[in-house]
Length: 364
Image 1: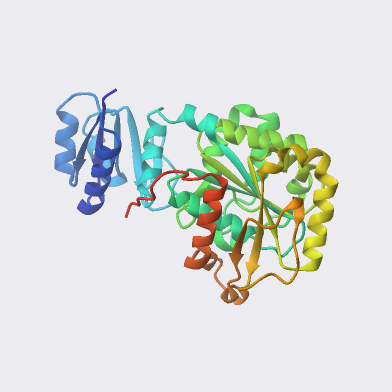
Image 2: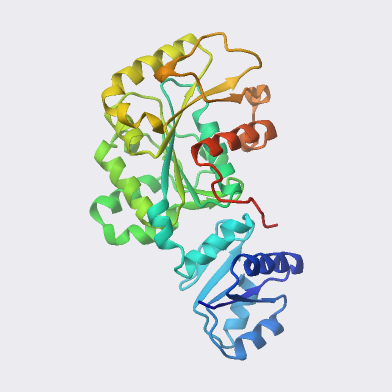
């Protein structure tokens, strides 16, 4: 079906690159690019159906005030901004595949595919200090680089990701869980509001709770309902869950519900023994889904590990390098800036789902 799109941005290089990419990927789309308000007004006045107007707030607002009614209006932003009524915001500095996916979603072309295809990926360890959050954030970033629409969901009792994202809305998880159980009619609006986009991470996230009470109150049933609802929204290709280390009932249920589990170990006798005991304890429930587990040695130093590891009948499938500079990191964003670590996580992503997302073409 032919779709007519109008792009409006003052940056000629940006709008030309985006228009060229959309035309290449969607052969039956008619894409018009405008870089100043006069051209945009003429395009809107010329008549004919416009399925989507995608552009900067100033250009779009001024042109629409003089007439024209596109099917969808998408505002390109430089980060998280409140969306105006009847309009949708989209971060302009995303990989081109992610921008295309967002536009397709706004046109109603992506929802059914995402609803069926959203995966749950959990990064887990039987002991603390294994680097779960660092691995999870890098996994999210690499998936975003490949054009995936990803949600990072931290379910630790004490979530310190506000160091990276800022304080934000500390009651976000509480409000979502309340809507899920008592006000389902509010879910759609709240999830749009509280699942914020982070441009450096190239993904959405939910702000860290101020207190651990909500996480401590999670049950297997409530955790499953939350994941099911987030999946059914049709907004994400993958949800990366970062729980704390533990052996509770909800931890096991989370692993059962996950499509893939990245189980981190260290070259440390105590860590390995804890992992062995926990795997043995959960074996009756996880035995049939052992294929989900990807055993990963984190903080690996060159050479053979000191401790022999044969968990689940095999050794680790992949090793992620130890980055000594992270010992004294004062800016958590640096966890996402190591080319060596990013390359290793890219290999991990290939093991989880080969060739996910196709090429990693990027926007500006």
